[in-house]
Length: 185
Image (tube, rainbow, N blue to C red; front, side, top):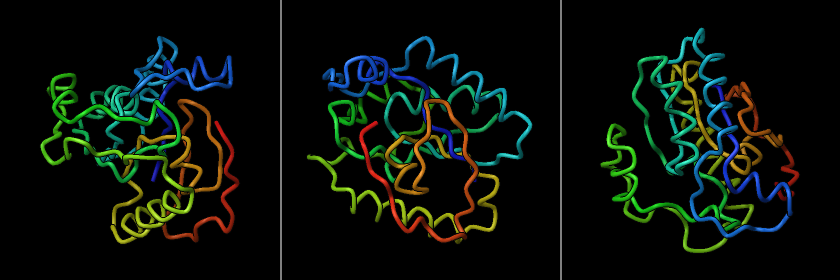
């Protein structure tokens, strides 16, 4: 499968400058983030992608939409690949609000509040990533799946730190990383 970390968000821009939580709930992409999403869509256009799984955070949906349009695919929104809840930016938007913001995205199956009520311990994120790895490994066509997700989820799944807009190939049938080197992004 192919993992794509969302493009630069308003949170990423300010946090990188100050290393402090700027207090932005469910931030959207910056102009650079939109460029990163468009570039990723261009790079992924030649891939045999048949399914796009995406986190319900606005920054992830905004990143996934250009690839979905280019590939002629619908998005499958799943909280399973959401970010680790650790900062204000990890408070999501209610499903009703997301439906108004993204009327062409199917959000009927998403709970109104789909993010955790408090900080998510590292072991819980790693368990969620292990569940996702097992679910993907069970599919015959996992190689044709694009997953638009977040730094913390990619870290839990692969043990690797990825930049905004970075693409990473992962074989879910391979073992999970023995150690996840958690640190703040």
